[in-house]
Image (cartoon, rainbow, N blue to C red):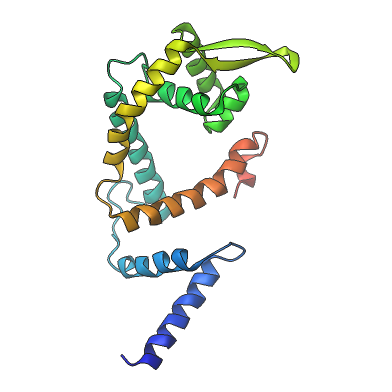
Length: 206
């Protein structure tokens, strides 16, 4: 292919890219990752082995399976520490970074179900990992923080959990991992505002 033909092909690719990324901030690395990914589209599975339904349902099913794999790996990596579930460690880690946070805010930072999140927080308090204390800016409210036991064990968890995290994306190259992270962030940017809007009717979503 001569230079003119290559330039024409590049322009066509750029047009497709801009159509997909309307109203988004884009840069050269994002475009190059996207362009590199196009060569895999024609070899993507045409059959839906998990659900047998559609592309969108199959994607949702795979995301659900990956979440369960991740939870299993993290739970195994934390054996011997006072966390009975992966979410208990996740809540503790988020609180470690945030410092002092209210219950509802902590649950929202985790994008977790409210009733289930309250259950996680209750178990962590019972096990002496976190503690409640009066909010100095709101006498009616309370904040959460790590206890010394919590600080010690979350640091131990930080040394064990990375192996579980590495397993999830192990089949990918560094470039593929960055591409995946970009796509996952796009999904999160789309879904998180809807998660926060608890009163929105399901039929109005999307």
